[in-house]
Image (cartoon, rainbow, N blue to C red; front, side, top):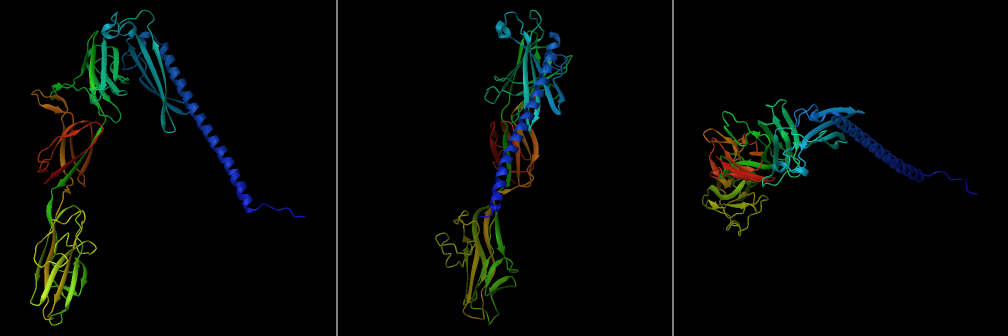
Length: 486
């Protein structure tokens, strides 16, 4: 009969794993349950607050239903905050007159009254897990008897994009500090891109500003000593008439300015004051400003070679030439060849005669591709058949063109074509004028509305383009403006 066996390590591991699976599942279920409970709690609080606000408004007399600074005006705050069960809430109330289409709208209204009743919208907002949520309640409030005129006229704001299509959800702020009480109300354009406010008090001082996240903005402008003909100016509401203002906004765009200096000649030259610009030396020496064979008169090495360090310009535009200055006594020879960065000679198909070495200078390099050969070096071969004499190399160089090179810290003025009005003499007052400077890398990125822009660079000469060519910026696009100056 076998003795009972205890639990092995494998049994323990399997048991623990099963327990973990069960408890992790329960933990996930508990967590989901808590989230649902918290969400329901926050939503219920928002519903209670919105309902209470609506009931308060409905308890007011019809004439009192309105917001502070709104159209219609009343005692209700447009924005308020409160806390319930430790959760902060925001309360936004909007009251508007409604021109009911059942008896005709606007000028076609059969009784001429466009303020048929009031519509109340209460939105309660709160945060849940970093996300804004809201509860919205809408209710109509009708007059106690037959509809009556509220006086004034109708203010209509249309929001369109660059091609005239309606923009829904744009924030429209309407201000009028000249009225008593003052008007300061913010609402949003509907699916047709419109905000319609019947019952607006007559005035010549309605100030409109329109915006939307990720979009440009538009507004009315004041008439003053400078802007004597604002475009558009403040809106005027006339008794029993509809005043319409149309404002164009669209997606913002990016214009990146890059400033460069022009292509210029440059060279990598070595006059052999020391050996710091040599990557390889075989039986040669640097002395007295020249490269020569090792040894001295009567004991010179019969042959030797040297290779320069690599020339690799960061902004290489073209290879130009190789030049050298050499002394060749009788019975000596010295030639120069061109190599790539690894020391391999450029083939004769790229540079004819390179394998044999060049003895007359300069050597034309303009046919050498900068793409295939972004870096070059020089190799010298020295020899003598008389140890009393040795050839010497006093200078060699690789010439090239470099550029365009980033031109840093360049001040500029950017001006758009759109106008916000004119002076008394008719001179335009531009909506967008930006004074800025490119950064240490010669770049400045700008977020702008769609327009046609020009740059001015005081104190610099434009090389390319040769004039301030306008840059057309369409909505929601990215454009580069490359300017070469000196």
